[in-house]
Amino acid sequence: MKPSGSTKIVRLIGYPVEHSKSPLMHNAAFQSLGLDFVYNLFSVKPSDLKEAITGLRAPNVAGANVTIPYKEEVMKYLDEISPEAEFIGAVNTIHNRQGRLGGYNTDGQGFITSLLTEGRIKLEGQKALLLGAGGAGKAVAVKLTERGVERLAITDKIAAKGEDLVGRLRENIPDCPVYAVAMSSKEFAETVFESTLLVNATPVGMKEGDPCVIDPEYLHKDLFIYDVIYNRETPLVAEAKKRGLKALGGIGMLIYQGAASFEIWTGQRAPVEVMRKKILEELSSASI
Ligand code: NAP
Image (tube, rainbow, N blue to C red; front, side, top):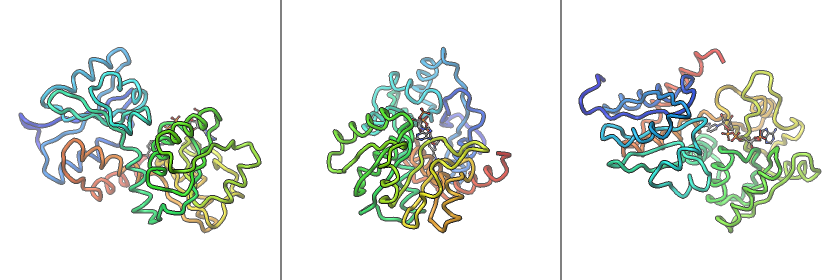
């Protein structure tokens, strides 16, 4: 579609942003619904962040996505923050409502929609183990506990990070048993063996040559694996599949978090299959 005098702009704010697949996914979605919107990249130097956010209040801007390194820092420039983004401590989506800026985090929604629709599992009765208590890990933890898994165990390289997340989940979602477990402890092996769902939210597996995030010998047949990493099939997913386990990578999470953002900006249901096709085309042609 040609830009018109009333085209609504959505920006990706980050530094750098050139690697992002989001413009392809969102522009394909806008086009398929005939929406007069355009998604573009906005590489913002740290000293320009405040001004860049002020620019989102203009009437022709629908909102933005926010990526590394600004997901936390943007929060102080917004007028409202959703309770979920507040809990996670990070915003990945901004909506401009007549000059007032609302901040959201759609990663958890992306994860849970992908897990339920593509993984086709029920959360009831699941004993979940989460690896990584960073941004993605917090988003995953909120959704798993809100949606009623039987219990959630959390491991992070930095034990205090896992314990801190456990403490905050206990305060906010008291009905779900949550505990921290150190990867180096003997309880860790026991926890894995008792678990039915393992989610990797660490970056281990993103880079060529990365190891499997846990000892593959721990991968027992009753474990469902979800790895939030989307740029390649990780050793965790490959090892799980080799052993006949059900395993999903993070492409679905990427698509559904994008779909949730799209719905915030446009008020319309996202054309998920159009977005999926575009992302899969892009990932299969990328030299990563
Ligand atoms: P992050 O904030 O840095 O969190 C990662 C956490 O994992 C950190 O606390 C890190 O500790 C910890 N960690 C690293 N290695 C570990 C290990 N071996 N065992 C246990 N914990 C370990 O990163 P993030 O933003 O959450 O991103 C994590 C991954 O999720 C990335 O690969 C990212 O691409 C992916 N992601 C995917 C989607 C999607 O849509 N599919 C969305 C968001 C993120 P240290 O800080 O000490 O290293």
